[in-house]
Image 1 (cartoon, protein in one colour):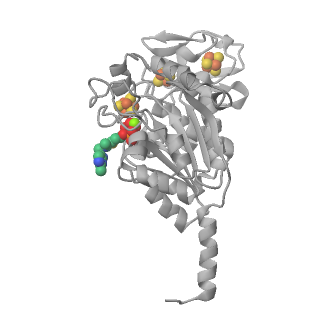
Image 2 (cartoon, protein in one colour):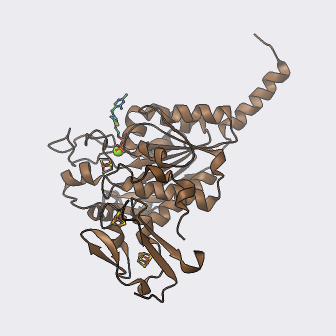
Length: 275
Length: 69
Ligand SMILES: Cc1ncc(C[n+]2csc(CCOP(=O)(O)OP(=O)(O)O)c2C)c(N)n1
Ligand code: SF4
Ligand code: SF4
Ligand code: SF4
Ligand SMILES: [Mg+2]
């Protein structure tokens, strides 16, 4: 039922700065609902972001929050988790923040399997700086820096994280709000590095340029391209063209970094003062 | 309007940006557009599915079970 908004939001800061129909508010609500349903202690939960419209989200969230520099949310979050592994550390990032300037941090966090939950508000564009293409902009679509259509090949963020060793990976969209909330819940419960590719919409700088005139057009566009992960593997490459799987894509638990590090610390203390 | 629905729908006019998503997602035509934002037209039809609330980017529409108050 209705969320206790005053518990989770800094209501005095609302209304937020996002444009009418921006998907980032929908994804933010899904995170809050997932936290509520998972029963995470707000006092033991830290939310960290980089820079972008998406990265403004923690500013509205009633937790200990950190708004850092572009692309660097994961390094700050890594520091927090290493210093106090008991905390739940959530990273909110954008497709530009996570995959362009911060791409290196993303792959190394996955490789290390550090216990962060990273939710990427993926609207496949740089929203905040008025619509430059990102590494997630689909081929052929228009951006301020792609006036004749994007000609580069985009990343598949989930495949990227998987290739880097990611052990929990899920995807959903701002259309599939209940499903998205469930994916975030599973990610929050996961002990190691968990990554959720949350497809969002930027009606202002993506929709307008790509004949998706309303926020609803954009959400329907997300719906029409999403395929349940269970059906995805049975599809031919032609059928997969332009589409993407949603659901839990990888779930292969392995030892979380701070646990391994804890063992090293015990060893160091026992052997003491070497070097 | 007196409602026999067990749900109570509240719209926060100060936060609503009139994107129309809540109206588009309601499966029961409970909401009607007032220049983009919602007016609660048929509260007795509400089934409490929360599709309006969960698709609102602005936390501006909430649905509560009456007993929850
Ligand atoms: C070091 C640095 N380089 C560039 C910028 C400019 N800048 C701000 S936000 C942004 C991109 C944001 O895109 P994304 O992460 O996808 O977030 P969105 O706004 O789409 O949610 C850029 C390039 C910056 N703030 N700092
Ligand atoms: S520019 Fe795009 S991403 Fe940024 S608030 Fe507006 S709609 Fe949202
Ligand atoms: S809860 Fe469901 S039925 Fe009720 S107003 Fe919202 S969308 Fe319509
Ligand atoms: S979805 Fe929210 S912001 Fe959009 S019209 Fe409905 S109440 Fe207003
Ligand atoms: Mg973006």
